Length: 218
Image (cartoon, rainbow, N blue to C red; front, side, top):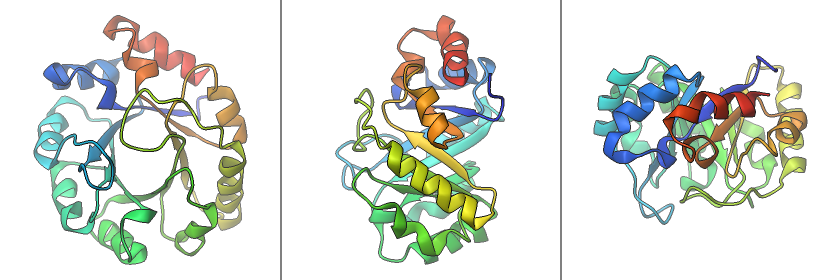
């Protein structure tokens, strides 16, 4: 078992009618991060939750809140999510014209900052922010909905891992979309150290959360 691998269950696949209980359950089951997908119905074709929900969920776990903003524009809401209790705030490279400025805003609030890129976005678009980011999130599905099939972007994962190595900085490489126990090993071998999983964890019910997290970690 690779103890350096972090598992970040995506609550997008949780039961929203008992969301606080779900967060407590994945915390107890061994989640490293709580991955929170924020969607606006504009940047992606779905709407999820806002800062007030994140603030309420903050009472349910002390684990790292990994907040993924799939919204456009993101800048007007960064402080709200920071105040709500986000530990890592990840924005999309494609969602704004001034990525460097947005990352500066996140860092000025004392939070770790992440950048996400969609499946078709080239890795080299991140070249000039490598000195700022704490996390890079590669989408391996087109963002918006859970339960999609993994797009095998192993070459892209390897390319970003090489960029991280060259930067000589401690940057998490996170993969989100279609991650399962069947492909996790290959994703890790390509260079990822944080796995976001929604359906793979939540589909079997709370009594299997620990087992599902362990299967990914192995």
